[in-house]
Amino acid sequence: MLKKLKFYTIIVALLIICTSCSRGKEAKSDMEVKSVAHEGTTLYLANKEKTNLAEEVVVLNGDNTHDQIEEIITYLGNGIEETENIPTLSSALELINYKIDDTNLVLNFSKSYNDLDALSEILSRTSLVKSLTELEGIDTVEIYIEEVPLKSSDGTPVGAMKEADIILSFPTNPNEEIQKKVLLYFANHDATHLVPIEVELNLEADITVERAVLNLLIEGPKNEMLERTIPEGIKVKDVFVSDSVCYVDFGEDFVNKHWGGSAGESLTIYSIVNTLTELPSISKVQFLIEGEKRETLKGHMQFDILFERNLDMIESQ
Image 1 (cartoon, helix red, strand yellow):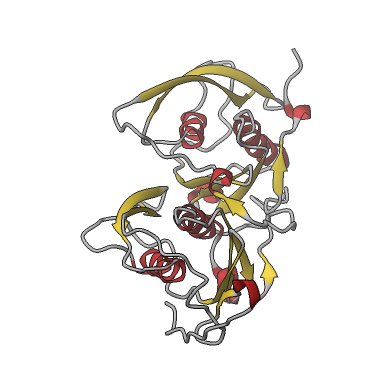
Image 2: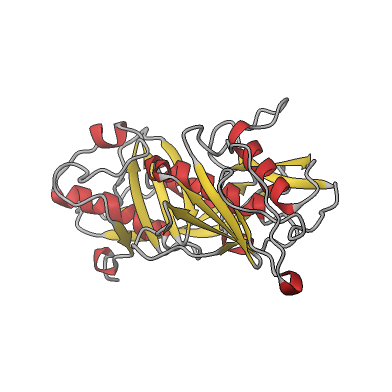
């Protein structure tokens, strides 16, 4: 991924070091990077379904932070032999340069970063932050695109991200089941409003709560007085949470099988949005079709915006 870097020694009073690397164009001091022990480092690649990240422990060969940064990025771009987990960084993704500012690692990518679909971008960003902050002395990671800060869905700079900012969770016991109560929103019998129904969710450790509640919405209501809001048989391709935004990716059948109409679109959208925003980690929902934003669902409601909870859609008691 990275071209061979040229090294130049910069000696200043008090040994203040400039730590920047630019594919052989920028300098890197022999003294500024501390040696890091050759011990297992946890990296985060995508699982084979590309629905979550998977942990892989590797022994890095580099004797300093810069070398180890490059090793990690290579692993994330090429994968690890003899494992079914897959790279998170696209082969088309070009890292122009990087620098270490105190404990913040700044990665500057080319415009190819903008070509990533929403879910691939989340996987890439998450794996970079979680993997690189494993290095001693790297507390945060910041992403730039052609020297412009990466922006979130609402247009504000994402800024420096620490490991704790990453919301994706990883099951610790594959046999563990978690029980919790969740609210699902289905349409009332007249299909004019949404009705909240509390259900007990038996959550297996290898499925996220977001995917589990979406699957229950797709199954439809058990109460005969309520109506389904999502066409039967629809599958959720992917669902991720990042920066309090839940990205829900449906296949083309979500559009093709939908019954349409402005009221029908509204009930479907806010059935999903109101259900997901009941979860504490989610404040907004972004819909995707085959990994891309779609201007409208069936020609009525704008569908490519960030949706927030809509209390007006809920039937008054």
